[in-house]
Image (cartoon, rainbow, N blue to C red; front, side):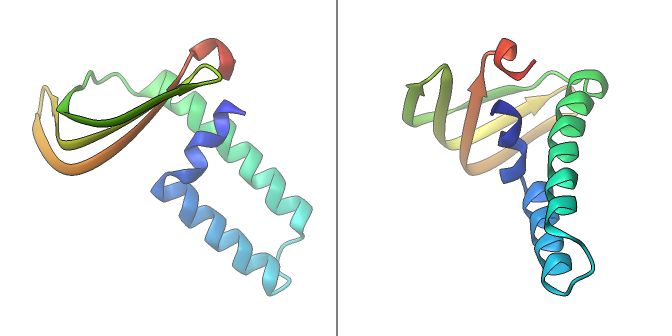
Length: 104
């Protein structure tokens, strides 16, 4: 369940579009596309767990939040992401977080 969060990222959506196109033109079977998406979910979780070492601070105006079934969702306005390399100002950001025990 929780691993499916990565499907809504930019790279996840591009993957889904590409797989849909491949299924539509007969290059790929639908069940094979589902297997690719499942592998993507697992690979993203593993890569973020083992390869990302950077710490980020996020500040912004809390626009909306929700907690449901151990999943927190926050929407920040005028958010600023800071790490050791610098900072990035973004207009609006949605953060979805869950207990890491749910992922494993």
